[in-house]
Length: 131
Image (cartoon, rainbow, N blue to C red; front, side, top):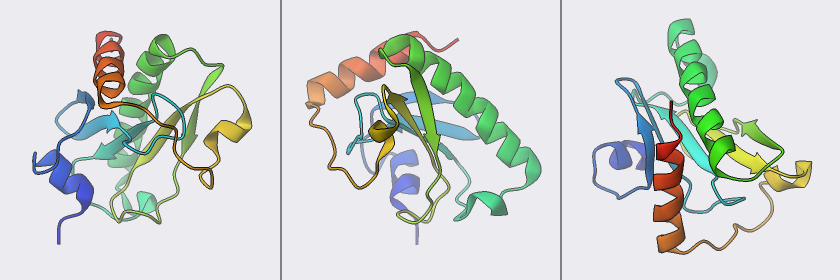
């Protein structure tokens, strides 16, 4: 059964696309911890990050680095935090979260409110900073 992320990749569920290449896809989280919270996934559906082949894992991290650099140029933050939890969706995904404090990446907090217009503007702005 395809995951929600596979459905996003297939266009069955809309998303705020940030970047894409042959093997990876990045999009804004619709329940963000902070404005600009981005998810990066491999296109191949694999449940657990450490089940990825070494080349797939390194490729995912290199792609995530490019997205994080664009995110840092687009959203005022001290750092872009990285988290891999892996329990909520059985499809490898990396959270990239703009941080001012360590508490900004607390997954027990409720999501911040971001309008659909803000999400679309953020996605375009981050896209414009992709190298």
